[in-house]
Length: 294
Image (tube, rainbow, N blue to C red; front, side):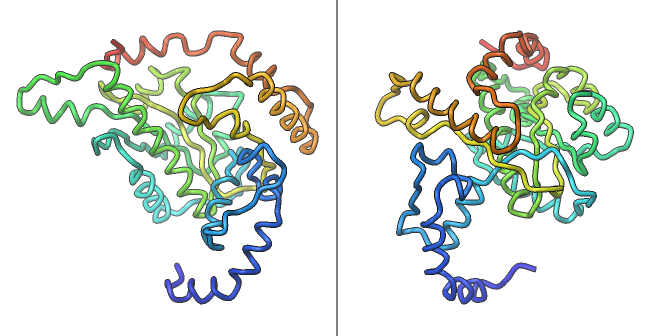
């Protein structure tokens, strides 16, 4: 049961100052905000209250999980999370994203065996597919016998971004409710097969799967590129890209060492990952579903 606003206010007033002082003493690494600054010390702005600090810390605390507790997620909670997910921003309020819960046993079994290298799909209490849906918008024209005059790449782009925003909102809502998630983009490796399983019509495509459940254990956080590498002022500037990548590689390998993993540079790992062609038939699939890539 959610506490009343008055109860929350009384509780916050009693602990606000001590809590803020504690948060401000902690480094970005301690709070899991390893990507919030290149510098080891991170200060919370004075204008943030304790609740706001906690909310931002939870966002920065995000990590994908692949191990789940043996605990089901109630239908009532899932409905709330779906509603929160679909409250994401939408281009021109076109609402071009849909969610499909994969519940039927035989259908779950298909997804469980789709990617043998990812056993956490089968283990997850919940598996959903987030779809980009350009069908509804076109239906508004088709039902009145009118031509849809915006059949070009931007139309596909808009639906895909809507779906991406819904995916992130779903994850954020789930984490606020104590759940953890793991997006599965690899379902696009077999997009035609997945679309046939889910009976996706023209102008609807599977953007990503989403494993969801209660965590079996807390995961170590991964560092992110520093703000100097990713945030620009007035114009794009990557003149120092090699220095920034070297700095990140150092933090990345340090994090791997703490986690007991074999150390390898992030730059080398990602270069190796993308040394082989991936999803080269994706454009053809998108066109088969009726979208234009012109």
